Length: 155
Image 1 (cartoon, rainbow, N blue to C red):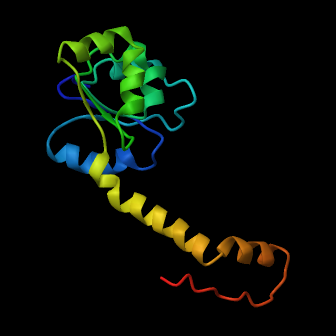
Image 2: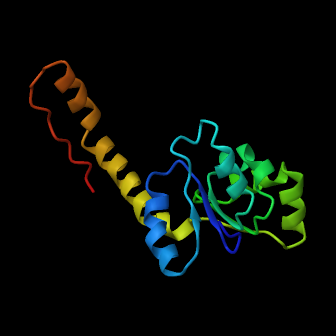
């Protein structure tokens, strides 16, 4: 693979590589998909291709795990909503920290694209608490089919 803007994926988030591939292919930008199992040791060929990557989309812990193979990286796109864990990881990797301090490494986060999923998650938990779904799940697992009284919170 050419090192010209090679994008490497180092995240456990499912389908990131498959979602990116058509868009990057249309722009003639090569993609190095994440190994099937990030917890296992990737092939030597994959690791040598990772050394060529200039753009990395990664979970912060994967940045640490593959730090010795991030020789040409110029941009790290964190898979996390906030930058804290990614910055903390980079501070512990001397060559990446030096690049960041010299303004040779860009660090970005997902941020706004997670607004809707996070909102849905929070609202789902509020409904779970307000409607006492936990009590209904417990009753169901105990095979108790008694009617639960709905209590209006007055909102």
